[in-house]
Length: 52
Image (cartoon, rainbow, N blue to C red; front, side, top):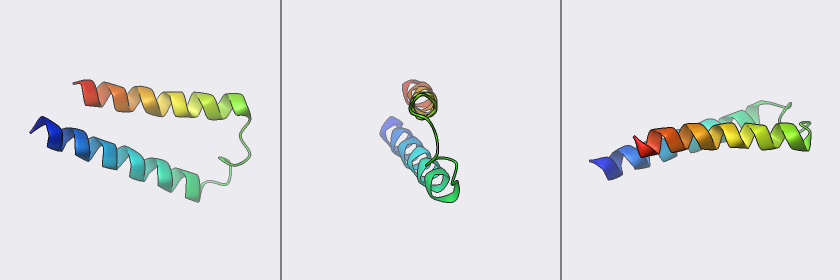
């Protein structure tokens, strides 16, 4: 059951990230620091859900 939960979370995060990247023109104009913080935030959320 934990593997299914982990897989579902990974798919959901991946889809959300891909939709955000393709739908928002602001992503391409981010500075390096903003892009790093954005990725770090996504990683923290994914890590939280995967570890619980």
